Amino acid sequence: MRMSSIMPKLPFGKVLPLIAVAAMLGAALRPAAAQDWPTRPITIVVAFPAGGSLDFVARAIAHNLTDVFGQPVVVKNEAGGGGAIASTSVARAAPDGYTLLVSAIGPMVFRPLMDKTSGYDADKDFTPIIQAADGPNVILANPKLGFNTVKDLLAYAGKQQNKISIAHPGPGTMGHLCALLFAKETHVDGNLIAYRGAPPMIVDLLGGQIDIGVPSYGPGSDSVKILAVTSDKRVNFLPEVPTLKESGINVVCSTWIAVYAPPNLPTTIAAKLNAAIDAFLRKPETAEKFSRIGLHALGGTIEQLRQRAASDRAKWSPIISTINFNPAK
Image (cartoon, rainbow, N blue to C red; front, side, top):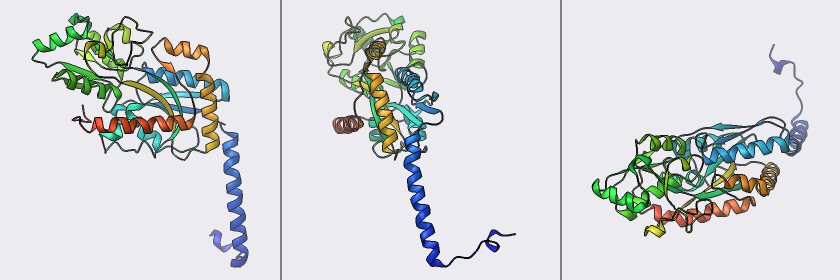
């Protein structure tokens, strides 16, 4: 039997008030749901493989949020496309606070500027939550080549007719941009090789398959030869390692890491997340833990993250426009 045959027919004048009541109930329930959040497990999607800096930060935050909210917070690595795969996935997720993204300056600033087919708009398709950390990129060398300085590397490149392999963590990452700028400044005709993050790159450096790599400093970096840091000044956790500027190469770049959510996340949930993560990042023990792998714990407001991303887009956009970028390399 069809439902319409047994439902009473109401006059149109009585239907309108019922619709209005239903709408008010729905509006009342939405804030209540946000107030009660979280009531089930949360997933943090990481834009790069396990074992790298982003993974380290995501797992530290996940552990803390599990304690704060009393719900499991699990980490899921979705590597590929220089962070584009994870970014696209989270941009299309439900804005309910149960899916978060730990990403970096590359996917959130560079990739959309370099590649108009990236599949997402970093400014419109995410809700910013908080800046988590930042740290310098490094020039890593194949230890089998015996380099001790950037000068040694350039001398080797000259003997190879300036053709060397330069690896980076993925298309559109800060490492990719650093590699391009390094090649441009040194006039090296580098064969750029894209990896799915720093860990597999370091494995190949140790195995002698590639000449140099340009990731952000992180777990595993000390296992190969570090020739230089790309910060403006030397860093306290690598005091003996010179900057590229000290070697006469005017390249300065660093990688920041941040937490995002899908677009249109309720402001109450975004505020809860920001407050909880900010308190964690401001703890002295968090700063000490992060510094062990070369990261500076940040924190701050939602607006500070939004402003930093906007500032970096304005800063790097004209530089990127002068570089021949191939999203497949």
